[in-house]
Length: 402
Image 1 (cartoon, one colour):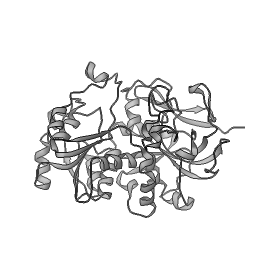
Image 2 (cartoon, one colour):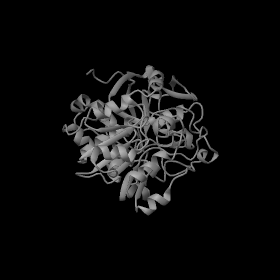
Image 3 (spheres, one colour):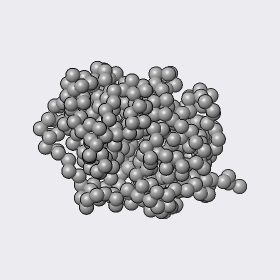
Image 4 (cartoon, helix red, strand yellow):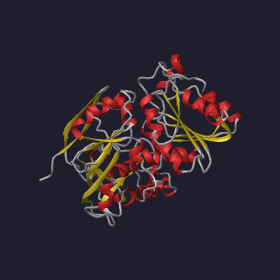
């Protein structure tokens, strides 16, 4: 008899509940009962609430009621499909939030964020997310993972992994995503880097900037608690609720009004800078600001989410992802931009090794906070109010106490 499963379900703007779910199957009913003989079923060890989930819960996407949630998954393998060769029952693994087949052109080129075979409607898929292929979410007790040999990153030592599970839980999304933003922005030894946004991804990006050798990492946000969190591990900060002249603030910190590299960790729900502008949603403001403050021939990393369907946008153009971006400014400065989902597999093993060998304390830096699965609705509410925390759900009471 299959075990009971429970998970977080979106029920409409501002409302999520933990509900009973079917135990996972090695088929995908949403895609014509597609068999998943290459898949695995995981018992969830840790699964996180993400800012991308929050966009759905706020009603800022086309997510339908009943959408299961959760794409940041760390788990234990409990069942294997017939064709899985190398992953074994009992393995403790990290699951990239990108679902990828490992067989298509994009996967073979390392662009696993836009796999061609796992979503009938577009390239790219993810667990528990709108328009991302119909895969069930991982904010649950159990979940199915396809192409297990390809997708799963096995932790080499179970006991060591459980000791560092709060850090390792960040490998499914925000740490690689933050690192991708910093790396593609060109952060290297001695760089002056600017990170827009001090939410969990922004804090992960700031951590990545330090890991990559940035001389100065500056974080801008309007939330004082989140700025304090950034300052707690050595970042310079700018309170954008009080200051709208970002170049001037950067000059006060470094002596120059420009940075070498800039990263957008805010996305399409951005608001204007300064005491007057911070109450007004301006979805292009971060991108335009970053073009202004980044030096000529510099790079912008854009892991912040932008969508093609936003029913809550302030303008008709923004509802379909058309924003007022000053592309002429970026062109004139010969800047380059990297957008889209982070291809997690490009980075997750290296970042795992950095965690296991104590080169980085990502859980501390993002203020990882463990809560039971049944407290997920409260976690969503607190996160939406700007809590300077990264919430980890513990569905099966497996995360050891600190």
